[in-house]
Image (tube, rainbow, N blue to C red):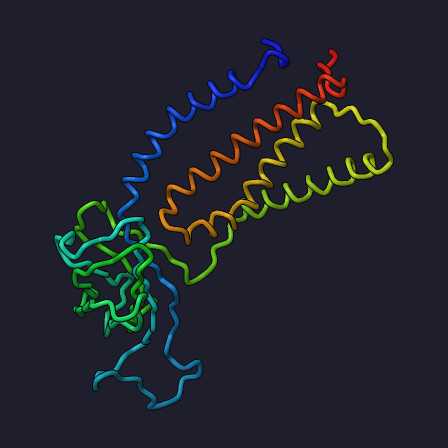
Length: 278
């Protein structure tokens, strides 16, 4: 089949075939991720003074605290469906690990306001009583521990949730591999800029070598992925964000692929694209 014979019916057949394979898998994945709770470590900071001052002690409720740490945790409904209080088979427990000891845990804020949730305290960690959590609802918990810097682990038995997620957002983790990849893409795009822009401004005809065409397409794909992140973060605030994250990219890519195909066929008819010569 030649490019000229490649009409919209053939293109539509490919699209519907891909959609028939992808959509059932996506619906299954969305249903699995529709119930989700995530515990995030927002910050951890020591309360011990920088300089050791004799006879200076920190106490809470009359109890002296050795090497105290203040940690802020956030429990967020990251799914697309509510988690009912009846879904809890056990309270959600937040275990304190790393050799630290729990001193106190209490709710400092909720979104929306006045979510009726109770925090229990035990030596091994804190427990969160069952409560109704709608999508995007969050509970901020202030935790005071003694000993070394604490580590946390959430555990619970909740219907529809295999395990409560945990994220440490208290410090940015830089990936050397990601930094190197971003640097390579940036360098490559600047390189292409100095090739194509001067050629276009001078009105010169430029036959793109096969290797340069492959490099250009690859770099464009990586750049598109990198710049798409803010758009996905914007979609996160929408209702049924999981569905829109599939519908918007899929629809956009189908239209872009169609217009790119039509443009390529037009360039071929005008003689701007020809097979590579051996």
